[in-house]
Amino acid sequence: MANVYVVVDDKQDWAPYYPSSNLLSFQEYINLPMAENKQAFVINLCRHYRYLSKGYYTSLLAEARQHKVIPSVTSINDLSRKSIYNLQTDDLNPIVKKIFEKHPDKARDSFDLMVYFGRTSVPEFADLAWKLFETFKFPILNVHFTKIKDWHISTVKPSSIHKLKDKEEDEFAHALEAYDSKVWRKPRAKKKYDYDLAILINPDEALPPSNKTALKKLIKAAKEYSIHAELITKSDLTRIGEYDALFIRETTAINHHTYTFARNAEKEGLVVIDSPSSILRCCNKVYLHELLQASKIKTPKTILLDKDHKITDEVVKELGFPIVLKVPDSSFSAGVFLAKDMEELNKITSSLFEKSVVVLAQEYMYTDFDWRVGVLNKRPLFVCRYYMSKGHWQIYDHKDSTHVKSGGFDAIAINKAPKKVIQAALKATQAIGDGLYGVDLKEKDGQIYVIEVNDNPNIDAGTEDAYLGDDLYLKIMEEFYDLIDES
Image (cartoon, rainbow, N blue to C red):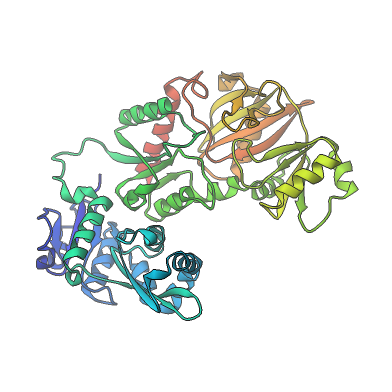
């Protein structure tokens, strides 16, 4: 992992804390040899961040040396101007209002909150503290709330360790330890691996994109390419700068921490799969439909239904019953429904319009199985046939909320799959990007139709790897190594 430096104006500021060989004064950091640890991570704890101060120059030099640093120069500049950061706090004020409505005892007219690396000692503000840190990535923030008509964030200012009192020093130390425990550890004598890969998972997810065995195989394959792969969860967002790459193995969504991880990792210069653009383009079926149409890729007939307009006879005539209805933002077929007649169509759309102003209506195209082509960096990775769940029209049957059933599968060699299926899959991903995708296709009457492109395809042991075995995981890690090496 990258070496971590803690930079302070004066080492006396660090006196209340454990000694650390990673601690540098501003002067020591300035004089750090250029060749010293190009992959360093810098925690800038200087007293001031104002323009041309020691704190400002610490972050400026860190970025010039290609060190990852908190806070960044952009963050320093943004937080120095209230006109800029007010735009960002506006999005958080509704949360602030709800907190004070639930806890009116907190203050009468004003309230101050200290946030240390996204943590606070006030439990009611824990989630808000994290959001503040995601928005303003500073080690210490002093947040002032006031009430005029409603409670709102009045000011957000960076603070310094030399201003902290006894209890605050303890809170800061715990937050720093949680943020990056490596500051408190003796560094490795010798680096064992060339690169470090974070694999984001949700241990409690019911239908994760990779099962536990697949995750173990990914970690093992990474070692073959001198990559140290480590499982992380959503609580590790602040550590993302320690790694060279991020592999998201949790179901993605746009309004979700997976997208935040992808955005932050990309900003830090990591290789990211799934990239933020891939999540954006694939997670919303309306966006994906328009993208595929613009690329002249054959799909089932699809019409966008608007909640403010009634379903017309032309729509029914164009698609014919049964009609497939889709919520734009859904996964594993959970937001997909089948209307067999006008009564069901009206009933289902009424329910779906409560969640989204737009619903996709699509012609029903039954086949015994769907093709799934895994594509990695514009090349086919694996091919599977997924069969419909028994007695159901989809691969996944969500009728029983306690247990999701699925149909069978075949994993086959890429060269055994129809060329037109592979070609259609590759063409579909050209419009998305160069990451890892799972393209779902149907073959009917000699024609190939793209159903959707998934930015976060299943890589499960016993299914997608049934033909390639461990080679599937090696191919993925080979791509990661090459991408990191080129970055």
